[in-house]
Image (tube, rainbow, N blue to C red; front, side, top):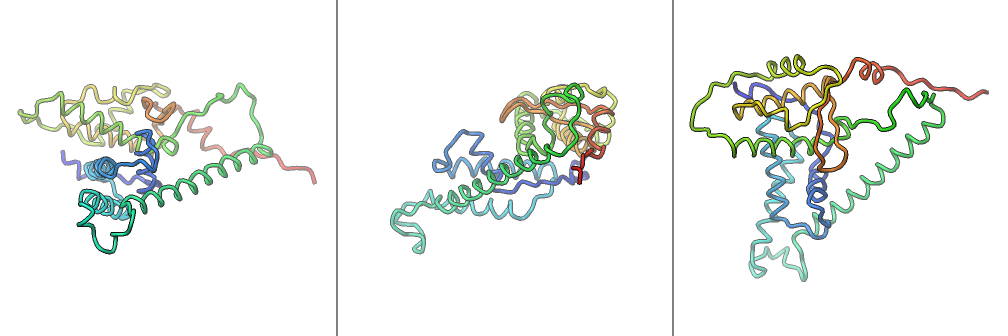
Length: 260
């Protein structure tokens, strides 16, 4: 099976700065203390994984990759060999990138704060269901569990698979993405959940690992599967949605109007 035959039409709303902020947060670093060499390697690993999965990327991701490689090359040069136009006193090749990240994070945090306030204001006029009709905590969805979290989890699975399997013997690939979609729908009952890593325990080839992940992404797009994660870097759980869940999500929200 050629994975290139299947192109994932996945809407990635996050941009390259979002990915860099995610990598910084994952390593629990201060933005001012980023290592260009380390963050460039991690960033390129993500780009290569997107390419492996045949996921379309915006040109901004490629531009950022080129910029990171340029900054990395500058950090490796002795100061006496820095480009003349950049050879300013106390110049740090990282500074422009750090400035962009700080400014972007400010706007991102402000947007998140305003979104929360908007939801709070909507609650004053929306019809409120009985407490027993709705769980106290809402499960995370694809929009809330970042695609970067999913890619990171997939990278870890793929790395462990490659370390534990001998690729000396040629094994015919027996699965397509469509096959895996049918398999997952046939083996998971509505409401049944499993850890992300457990999805790949029976895989026998690298290609099967890849198509399984692509199938999960497609089922999430189709609103058949939902992913949950308690906090950043926590284990990811995949759950098949129930018909009631889907009906509740598709139903229009009831609102109450104030008397004239």
